[in-house]
Image (tube, rainbow, N blue to C red; front, side, top):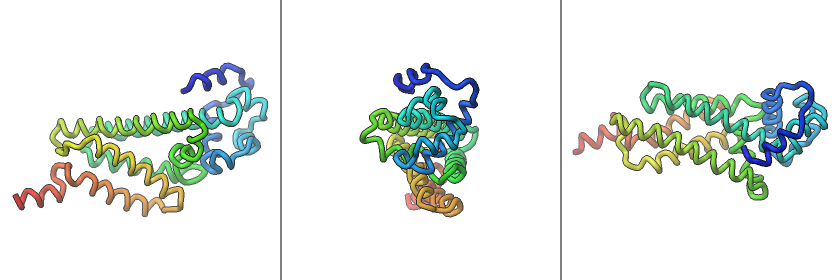
Length: 218
């Protein structure tokens, strides 16, 4: 969380409110309307808080957005970490993660991902948002990289190009967010993302059809 955000939290807050519920409501409004399309009245209505209480707890609109993004990102990174570190084969872990990601993209106030679907539009003139977006993508890439490296160590994944594969997995998650946003159904998105994952891993996943065919040819 940025230093400016921490300062906001020290300004004061209403006598009683559920911070987790308020951040979830704020995130939902920004996901539904985007940053520019969200008004303070929208946020007040969603949280049930008056403007003075909102300002005291979360600051003005840019700070509210940044706090909601940070809250959302921590949830998503934790979910990714949990999914990738189940004691299951690599492919099972990744398929399970895609299932959870797509379910999340279809369970909010609007389809899509708060970070991936709203942050790019404002990153150019909000440096803190740009920094959070960049660091989150890098963290996701690191999570995938570490899981692929584990699979490589266990001789389950044999590709040497782990760095690129990890970034392609990040791109797949981004694609799922975009497709959900434009109306792709959960079922269709599951089918296409699983097919993409199978193709992406086919050159390095031990026992994949592509590898078996090459072994026969050799």
